Image (cartoon, rainbow, N blue to C red; front, side, top):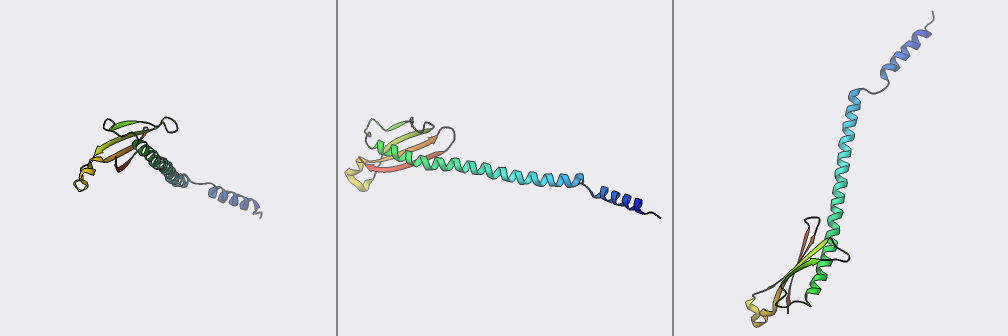
Amino acid sequence: MDFTGYFNKMNYNTIKKTCGFTLLEVMISLSIIAIALTAVFKMHSQSLSMTFSTDFYTIAPLLAKKKMVETKFIIDDAHRDFSGIFPDSFPEYKWHIEVKDTDFEYLGNAGENFKQIDVTITLKSNNMVYNLRQYSFY
């Protein structure tokens, strides 16, 4: 008897049944990949958001301090509330300065020259705000 044809058929049939993936296996693997990619994209978007806010909170204090120094030279009774933009290097940043009198009884007559200065830096395209407050004698 010649069994070579039988063994060839048997090997072919067993190989045919075990080759490839079932639809269920493919669907499960695609869902795992989708979940993993969703997590990666979410981490990437959070990373971009943190970079954006880090840039703002690095630049805004420097701009606020610059405006605070400039304000010390122009404060008088007529200039109490003014605002603008930084035209040269940071046109997307707005600033607002408000100068208020303070009432400190402990300072006596010197309290009349004691001022509260609030500088607010705002990013035009976003709702990010940085505030700086200083008390000074004038």
